[in-house]
Structures are given as C-alpha cells and as structure tokens.
Image (cartoon, rainbow, N blue to C red; front, side, top):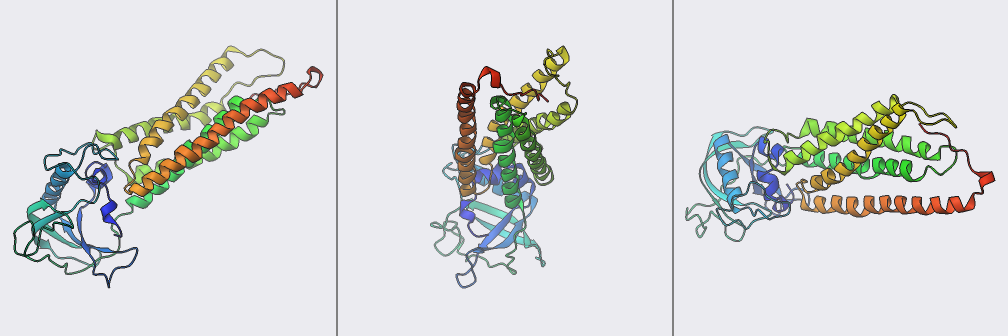
Length: 336
C-alpha cells in the first residue's frame, strides 16, 4: 500500500499465488491522510469477470523482456510496461464493502492509463467526462501476506541452500586432512541446521504459494526444481543414518563404496541444482528492490563465502601436508 508503482507486471499476471488471489483497485490517499508506509487504500475489489479483463489488459501493456521476464504478456496493447500497472474503468458496485473487505465492482469498460494520462476527469483519456470515484470506505490494512511469506521463504532458502548446506559439502570434500575427524564436526551441524532452515522454508512455500496449478511459467519451473532439490536434500540424512562404517586399516567394502557414490552424488547434485533454483527464486519476489537485495546477498555474500572455503581448503591442505612429517602423520580415521 506504500509503493504499488514498484509492483511488477510479471507478479501481477504470471505468479500463480497472485493469479489465485482477489484483485483490488487501490485508491491514492490525500496527502494529509497518507503516511510513509500507507499511501493507498484498498478501494474496490473486482469480480471474477472483471479480474479476467484487467489481467488481459495488463498482459497487453506488459513487456515480455522485462526483468523479471513476463512470460504471459501478449504485448498487444503496446508492451511497454515493466512495473506500476494503471488502468481506468467504468464499473458498478455489486456488493457493498464491510469492515475488512472493499466493495466488489463489475467493470463494463477498462483501458490502460497512467498517472500522466489519467482515464477519468474532464480531460481524461477515457473521454467519460466523469471525475474519479471515491470509495465509500477506505481500508488501509493489507489483505495479503504474500510479500512477507516470500521474503521469509527466500531468506531461509538462501541461508540453507545458499550457505550452510554447500559449506558443509565443501568442508567434507576439502578439509579431511585435518586430524580427529574435524571435518565431520563441522559438516554435521552445517547439514542439520541448514536442512532445518530449508524444510521450514519449504513448508512456508507449500502453505502460502500455489505454483503448480498453472503447469507453466517461471513460477512452475521454480516450484518443480525446488521440490526436486528438497527431495534430494531430505534424502541425505536418511541415507547417512544407514551408512556402512569404515574401520581403521581395513579396505572399504563394496556396500560402502556404493553408499558413498549415492550420498555424495545426491549431495553434489542437490547443491548444484539449488544454485539454479535459488537464482530463479530471487526474480519472483514482488518488490524489485527485494529482488536486487536477495541477488546481491546470494551472488556476493554466499558466493564469496563458498569461494573462500574452497580456496582456503586447498591452501590449508597443501600447507598442512608440508608441515606434517611421516612420523607425525595425524590419525584421521573418522570416516562416517
């Protein structure tokens, strides 16, 4: 309700949770009534037929090559808009407002407009000769928690799949030279905490978003990849629980070799697929500024951390081997 002009056309017409929710017309509050966090009120709610008409107009003015990409935009009405969809309409109130929901309207005419070229008014582009209507009630409480849920989901997935889980994988791969099973003491808590984060984020996604109903679009791709990554991730502690142990000074048994191939392969595969999934997910946040913030946190923050772990692991291994004499070779037989 503060800056709807930053709401992307992609989110309005592509994202399944948005498409499944009611569509409402915002009313710009007079300057005396507005606050920094609330500059608009929920003025009217569209009935189903009007909602479909508005979506068609938005897809017509939306630009396919926008960032994020508008996959369902038709560009048949100019195709120039990335954010801040405006439309003028003639409508009739069919259901009065109540304490929590605005009045429902049925639209008889709708056209794209802008703040610079309004639809209504004596000189309006719609040539209606009518002044803009004022809602009978102004509701300034948000009717959706989609933005908050998306941010929390994204943060948990970024912490889990972006930092903790791949860090645990790198430690297991590059730090086995350290004595007393040091790598495992780091690997296990990283994986446990990381997995708890991503399971929580996955539950938030399942309970707040419906990305599978459309069977197409970037949200469906993100959801499908996410479900695959989570399946691989949740499989890891299960196969770790049944791992065959390796005993000191004894060769690995065949079942241990097979287990390592499955455990490591699915772990590497999940982390690599998570890179694609998280990257796509950062483009689905409703707020463009949120998208940039998460992309920077993932690309720069998580990327630098993982690069440091990899480079330092290689360096530490070479220095450690140089510093250890054959007689002082550390015992590192912990191989869970």
